[in-house]
Image (cartoon, rainbow, N blue to C red; front, side):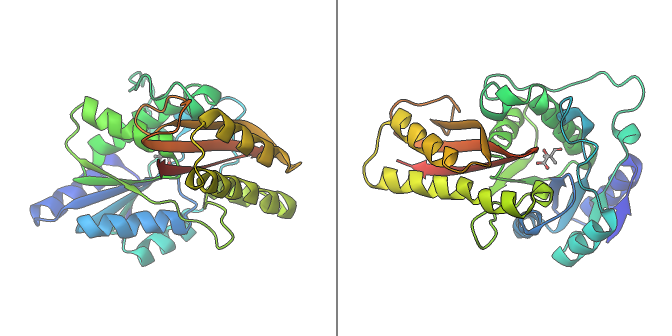
Length: 281
Ligand code: PAF
């Protein structure tokens, strides 16, 4: 496996792969890899011959007071894990390589970015869509894989690719969970033992929501309130949002119908965790 820090290096690598007739897949990450990331590589390898992984903690998508500085980084460990998963090349640029002096261009998706994480993290999705557009332009993959854990991010990127006619396929891969249900995240390392235990309230509340829907609940407001009450029963949980929205528009629902997204963001101390479930009602 090769590691490139510069744009020219990864471009030349991808060019060689293409000339050899290989289909190129991209798995964009911010590193500190876990099984969730490796599942994205596995899925990318199903539809690409060569998988490139980008590892870049993108300052543009972190707000003031967020965890950009603390975000865990370990390229040596990441490189071992990526190689064992079948990644052919890592693109791990510096901030100066991605945003040189005088950088002034941004990509913004409207509407879908207004609610959920977009409401509590202003500017976050502008940072995500800008860096992802740059990664698509640099690597020029045939397919890129994103995780469903960041449900709104996946929807926003799919919209951007459609709206801007970007010539690649987007695959969204299922959430990977620890054996007790906690969705895998690089941020889980911030949790102490008590917070780690309390964090289970997220997947449990989604399980409860699924059960209620299966039992006939169709009132989105009641469902949401039941989830809020359940999460609040955990003293360490501090709710950022709990929303029941249309899977397509990401707009809040009153009545449960069609494909819905139940999404939540909850803080445990300084750590903000997200989780979600898609339910076909
Ligand atoms: O999901 C992430 O890790 C990031 O938001 C992404 C897509 C790599 C962009 O920085």
